Image (tube, rainbow, N blue to C red; front, side, top):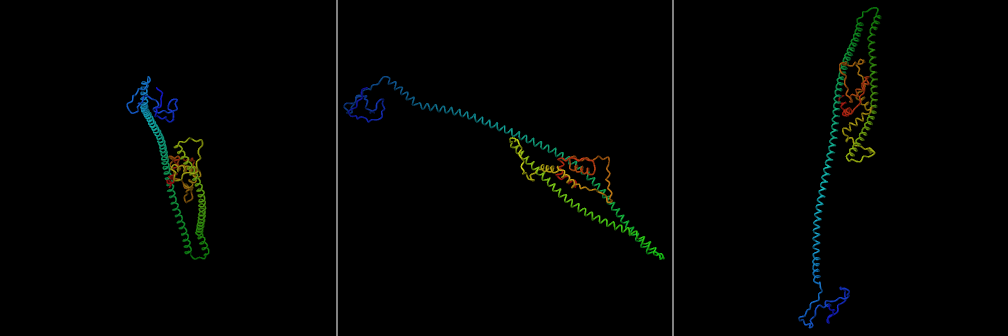
Length: 414
């Protein structure tokens, strides 16, 4: 290539940043000449000469064209590869998520199945516990019914004996009253006869010189009825005096009974309050145990203290009330008070003062079987001990306490 020369009419270009290799000046488009200009400059046809082209320039241009095509299609290829990889990733992700959802669904079903089995087992346990409780309750009620029947039979027999005693005493009383009336009538008849005889003797006596002797004899005859009348009047005064003393003694006894009943009522109130407090503590302990069993806590090393406050009386169940009666009757003082109030000690005697004989008992008759574990049996046993009969007292069980709680014994005695 020829050395570049500036044309005559061209001005030098302004200095600027260099884009060439090793050159600091910027050349314009006419720096290198590749053809001859028209010398005339009149716009006529110019003679153009072919530029010099080194060897291998065609292959360079071909490679450049290929490279340009490859570079131009590179972004499309990269985009296609990215799209294909994105599709593969999404497909793999969908398959993975499907497997995860399937495993999650299987796990949920397994958990639900285990919970259902656990709930069924707990329900079965609860039903078995209820069944056992109802079975025990049925057995207890059966035993209680049997004891009640025995008590009823025993009380009926006792009532029959008491009615027989009452009939016998009524007969004795009627006979004594009849005898008393007969004796009074006989006494009045005798007094009237003696008086009339004395009057007749005085009215019909003949006049005689021994009048003084006759008057003395008549006065001696009248002394006998007058002495009987004075004796009867003296007896009546003694009877009135004894009645007054008896009334005073009865008043003293009633006053002492009132004082004793007040003391006994105070003791009963104290025992009753103690029984109520004990049952309240049992109820609170039972409720806390049920609550702990439902929540299933870790068993503690020490038992929690029972609080002082408890449920009210209206919240007591039938079993709780039975336990109150059980605790109340566990005191000997309460049983003694009940026995004294139900069976006051007194001996029935006929009016003549002699001790009344008991009705004859058939030796072939079997001895009455006392109902074991009943309140009536315990009372009768203690009464027999007081009368000198060598019977042993029977212990009180749950059926007796419930029987006394329901008031069945008092109703039967009435």
